[in-house]
Image 1 (cartoon, chains in turn orange, red):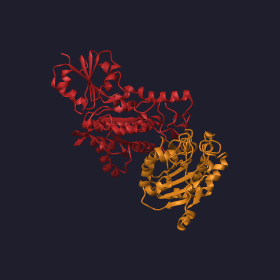
Image 2: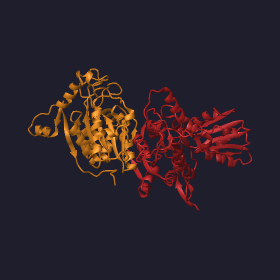
Image 3: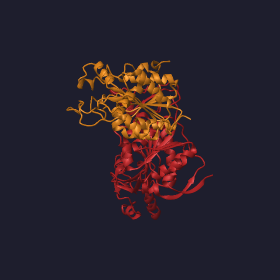
Image 4: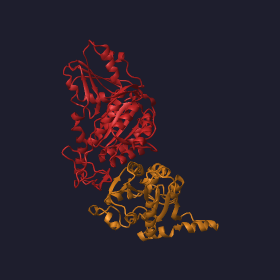
Length: 262
Length: 364
């Protein structure tokens, strides 16, 4: 088996734009699931609304493509009613951090046994490029035409503070690391949150001076700061630049969890 | 052999749910429905069921829908403000044909309104509250006994028709305490399983597809987007959308007579009360107080789909009188189906009509 055995071939072609990073994240997630030896019968994907949330529709398992922001709440019902099922949530920054923010923090607090993979493209892609809670300050979107004036969310810090058992961040460039992180997330009982920074050439890149897809991937790569390196910098009294984001395993712990397979 | 208890209406609803095999409750505290959740919190863990208090009513109905796809009988209970929050996901349940039961212990609205007072102001909201066209089933209990019986019935209808079913009670019936007879067993209508190899949203001749329970290897994609028989999104196909929505409505509306549940009292009367929920009790008092006057009474337990044929069973009727704890929401529906005048008797504020108020509406 490989990740490609999990796809609904009869639904191709998919809706993702040329150069989109979501496919990479979906492949990495399915590869990790495949390596876990999970069966299609016992695996359920749940999602909300947005580009990322279309992913379950391309996968052969049972899946719920739900309402905007509510994927984790639906997934909570699936997992609590049948803990024998492996439940994975695909979401995006708008779906998870804006309209679904409350469900996110409460699922972390409950530490319910879900794995949530967030494709963070820092924009509302499907509706045409509006600013999201993770759009960096100063970045251009259709609703922040003069640059975003708001501070952006650090979703991993939020998940850690709210009580998730496993939290990691990687990018669409770091495919091997991302796949490993998703696998650890799947293995860890309780709430696992994996954030993947992805390029959105259509609605983020073209408004923010990334002429080529590769330019944005290069930016994502060069602005990823390894957690170990970040910790060293802080130890040595160095300032961590504000436009860097920390990648790596950010939390791994064994707090009491809900909905764990008996 | 039955057992007799003295219960509150909300407790009777929770016990009815348990008797019906409900094993998942997702809810959020709200007056005057909270006793349903509290009772389920005590009882469900002892029956290998799941009680979970969610972070709001949006999450509550979402969790209920998720649980239903694993095959569980699942419910929530709420009141006005929480009911308003649930509307988007109720539309999702209708679109995805997810069986679920929603208990609404109605209170005075709009907004926070009268949390501790009864009302029937959500009767139109339960029918039309989510966006788009769809149909649902709504039952209205008028006693503690019916809180139990109609909750059982709600689960059976939800599974049979694969639709959200509403128990549209009110604070008065929900908080009333009276004698109730508990049967040893209750009727159970099983959810029709999907035949292997059949597309998951291909309806049978009754307009209802078989249910592909999650975890059984069906591999079903469930989406709130307009979808084809395979469950795949097809959101820009005009004919497919029209056919899907028409089927979702028709599977309920075409079963109107089967779903109908009402009593006809004094069918040859000229003046006829039509009531549902708590006002039923006042009408019963008027009939009791005036045994020699031939007063008709159409007493509804099913309000949606509205039993259009029922008023015509009063062949001599020259007037229908409709007492409601709202400004005439169902009176307007009745008007559409009768040829004689309909007199709406609205009452707001949380108190029932007095028998004298109803008697005064009768023409001598």
